[in-house]
Length: 343
Image 1 (cartoon, helix red, strand yellow):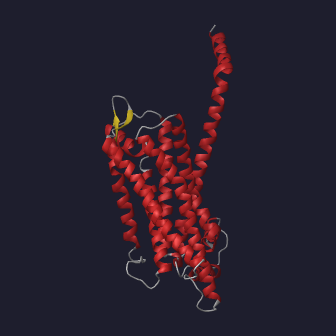
Image 2 (cartoon, helix red, strand yellow):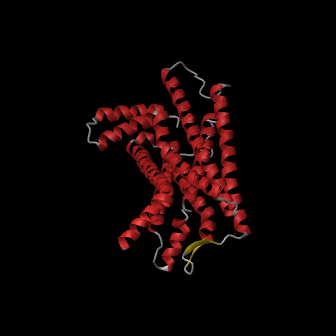
């Protein structure tokens, strides 16, 4: 009898429920495969960026240090998302109240990723401002970033981002009675989050748009930037590298804001409780878009910058125990010295 009941239940499932469940399960499997592919590729690619800057001394410029900061933020975004997915798949946790409260504030809602996204936004803003001063006001040295003070600037970026997101961390806590991670958002907290995302989206975008528009105008229209004062081929190469660097930074900025703005808008709607089934689906895919932007950055470096491209190739050869002679390294450093002199 029990066998007949089990067969009957399987038949009912196959006729009514299983046809609906199987596509959903297949979609989830495909989404998880894509998610982990994005995370693994992104972590490996951004790790290459960090290693190349550490390996090649002549690439240690203020611009590249800020790009390293963006790469580190991207790695943190991808890793914390991976932890969030792993812990979320476990189900209910049975642990101490302190650990549950910690996981609720930082992991269950993946709210710590907001810190890394803000770090990226501020780093790109400072990059645009630095390129603006370096190219349009090359003789003005006051307030310029140098390799001596860039560490303080990067530390300040992280501290400011953490301070701005701390109220959001405080806003979450674990309810032992219901076993859920609750959000205690009053009107003031909702207004704060709205202002946080608007200010840290609108202001950086405005500053970046102004700086790069002035740089593009000077490079391609008024010819006030990199106007070849001599006929040396070296100067022409430096001009090409400056233009490539500007294009690289613009591409990074466009990719980031295309992914970050939809995510920020949907987070605001979520905190304001203006959500439905469609907005929840959109927020789910916006998170994928944000992760994808973190993963494609190293490909932008390799595609646009010959220095990064050579550095990646040299590092990959070393990883696979290929022969890399001293002469090849010296050529790489000589070329990097020429191409990144203005960076």
